[in-house]
Image (cartoon, rainbow, N blue to C red):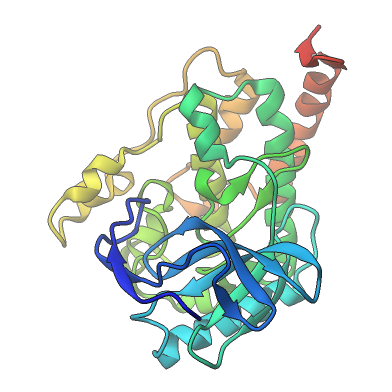
Length: 311
């Protein structure tokens, strides 16, 4: 690998500034037969690149451990576990994985390249219409139901981790774990604005589980439907240990959604955000409950030469 480690500032939610980076450029080799096309960004633990894969003769996404983590056995094992998890999951809404290189100087995960924007980027233009959001909500809830059947929780569902297309796709399984592992997790896990109360305070609010992903779905749909987060990340700048300020979802409920959000969708979203996990619907209930409204919304949309429009 020809790039030299350096440092950079990463501003994504949950990332830390000043992390070391490889600084790879177009044409640099990540591993034999796998070369950089362009950087895609990154977070606290990883750099992400669009790459060309000779063996598959295809574009792929490479999730590369940062230089300061590449030699750490714990980070390498986490990468390996994510690859193994993706290898056994098979669902139309979930990202596919194509293996990992755990040993050597550049440990990385090879992932499917998805065309399309993230839900986060679309929200830069305002709320998503109900006609667009209802089908996506059904697909996402169906994927969470499937994960439940596979004994897996994602624990980081948010607009950044949803790629928008005809069928939305859920990405980034770096925090995912089994139900047993999630229940045994004793420290906060997730992205501040989209974490269920039990993810913020596992000791005081009970174990994480499938209901935590339902909360993440609710928080994601809330943001998409209204154009604002259910809980402001600005509170995340509070001093370490000030849980009430750092995690406002521990102290209050989300404000009602705007009146332009259809009642059926609004009620489902708010139910997903119930503070008590026992009071949230299951992912299956969300999917089946919203399907009729999604079908009605689809009938109001026609597709012509100039794209989709409402009847």
